[in-house]
Image: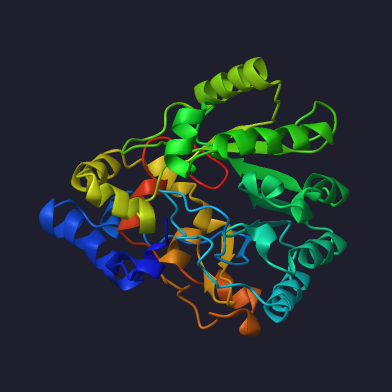
Length: 348
């Protein structure tokens, strides 16, 4: 399976995705645009709070090609953050007291300067999250020591596992992914991750395999903990239930399966003002592989840069960025539906 970009698909273009999102929600379904919903809730414009997370996409290269990937990542993607751009990230961090750095991709570990970057961030005393797809740990022997590397630098590991059975996981992420994920989770457990009292945090991410909202995060966490321990002896800390956002390959899936209109209507009708007030874009600055700045990872994939004179790391200025309003569009309904959704799970 290739990325949308590699096949020349129209949905590889952010501008086309935005056109599709507006046409369906506003023009076809005659539902309110997202900013109108925010205005009704007295939340427009959406104003940031003090940044708590610098989320950095270090590249779109990945060893997997998942059906629902909003990044359109895969082995054929060559966009990789350079060490020079990483240094700009470090310079920006040194100007701020942002406590957490969230490294994502693609598979962030495939960036040739990944370990150097983690070491430098650790030296700045910041908490580090790595969004690991698990299979990268067992994909090649050069990655087999990642659990020990993560442990040495106090990295919080956040890993996607669509379900606690092979059938559902492999249908979303590819044949054999579940088996490899279990192997990787056991390797992480073996060095202390997820073990009570270790201080080594291992969190899992669940997102629905179809065109529906996730169930109760608490209930799903209980199920995952019970079944993964029962069947495989695996332990972890928390499970994050994340709503699929209609961007890139998940948007393509919705259209191809005939679920697009129904899913968008479901998201709009489930709009929750409390969830909207707690969206992650308010306390996050997102950095792309080439150093541009966004309000969140989803805006990054739609090329919706921050509404600020400061739009690239080379011009980074925390005070100027703090004065911006968050850029919103129709895909934002995904983060504000039901219990809300963020990279850390539900928001209410």
